[in-house]
Length: 399
Image 1 (cartoon, helix red, strand yellow):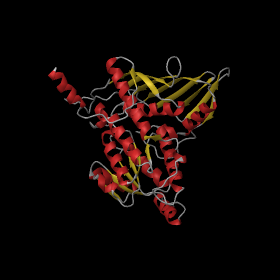
Image 2 (cartoon, rainbow, N blue to C red):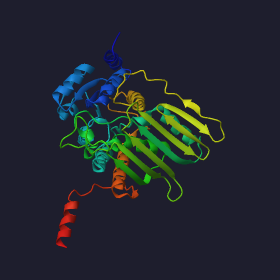
Image 3 (tube, rainbow, N blue to C red):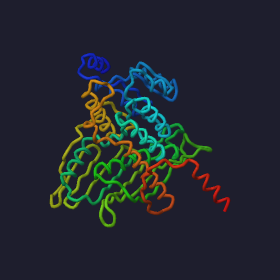
Image 4 (cartoon, rainbow, N blue to C red):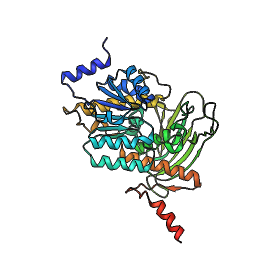
């Protein structure tokens, strides 16, 4: 039986589709499942980057990737790499994404660490509009949410009034002390999972939040492996509210609860309630109930997951990642030029502009948690002056 790499080579040589060669940044759980999915769809993964030579070498051998390195430029300048997939700590994302676009590579990446970093990514994407630049929020590609959005647009629930999201699961922390333990480096449930939910709610409702109120807590500040002078600062519990769309009594009210102190399996439920009914996605299944009906009806089943199991990646994200890779293949195979792509198959993808909005909401929730007040969501339109805080401090000293 031929493996997926042989199939990919045959697709290339047949001339049916010239899919771009791929370079992957990251050696974590997402990269481990992403690479086989890419290979299964006909993409050739030519290069892998890891934080150390040992990490990169080990995973490259495991997944059959011919080139590995711990130097980012070695991947970005690789002659066979036209699409770069970035799944690394958020504090490093902006640097790699901006540089990749500047070199002329298409980019799929995870979230950045700050709104300022996100704004720099938006600026780069606007400067190179011919290149693919999308965020890797896989929930937008999950069939149950694609179907939910379609039914919402068709009026299944009537006028959308309330969204309620609950996500429960075990700890998100890596075993050794790392970026997942540090709030400032993008760790925590709000940044890691909450950002995907904020983006999903915008995708489903077609609206954006204009005011937020939230609470974050770190209940587990030390554990058996992280102790002594080191303390965990990333949140393991978060609750926030979003007012989306219209102002005053109009618009959509959203509540989101994230709790990662729950041993056992991952639980995710997204409910949208309207004037004539409700839709609810539990895991990968979609249910609906109209006002006056006796019970829920199953509208779309997840049909099971046939790919590899990844303990650290919940099933909805696995399904969504697989669907995103399929959409990428459809986007690129329509063109003979490897770097050219068709927007239609990836039209539901989150853009870098969406990433900036999401990061702005995340930071507003953190600010609300600190002040205890509602906070307005104000998306930056220009990069802030890095010396602004210093100038303000000097001005206060003069006075």
